[in-house]
Length: 265
Figure 1 (tube, rainbow, N blue to C red):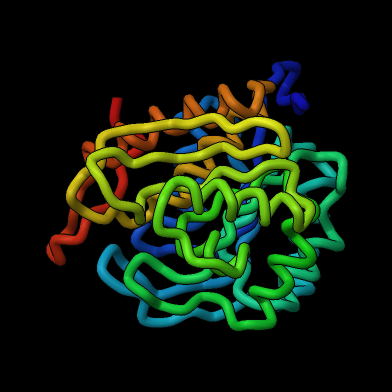
Figure 2 (figure 1 turned 135 degrees about the horizontal axis):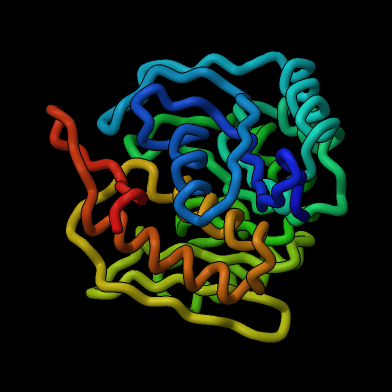
């Protein structure tokens, strides 16, 4: 959908996620990535955090009523072509998002559960609500391998098990799932886009380091391309190319930990 700005049309996308003051993940990274895909980016904040590329030292969820009001107020004036969710902090926020979001707009769910540094971002009740409330609404859900293991309730050690896990997640109600292979092994990072009746495979050379914000950026890129009307396979393919390039040219602060750079061309 294209909102009007002073008689000009622009595509737009909405991120519903936590704030990362380092700019390496969360809504800050989503907005940068939306811009790179060519859409007007909007953001609803679900939590404030204290974090950088190396660690998360604190997280403070926003009141669910405030999250709901943010979403409703955005939709009073703008209709995004697609919406993505990232860190949703707790069960009450997940329920507020579910109630506030229209069901007619494609929803990309990034089931953020644990930070790259290992900080737990969701409790068990919230994980259950991701599985039972948001996953059935998902146009596309974008777990990494550890997240797919939690959602599918199984261990993943190979590409065949990624496929089985994807089918299990679709059985929860998602229209499709792309399982990211960054936590896998081998010389190639393999992502599988899994639907009920077909599978698409995306590969890129595996780089020997972890990158803060790569999952946020990948799901945001997919959302941005879907918002413009790209079909899902093409949106994932373009997102893979953009984010792989951003990982290749990652930057780092004094900690030495790397952050994705999707602004690189």
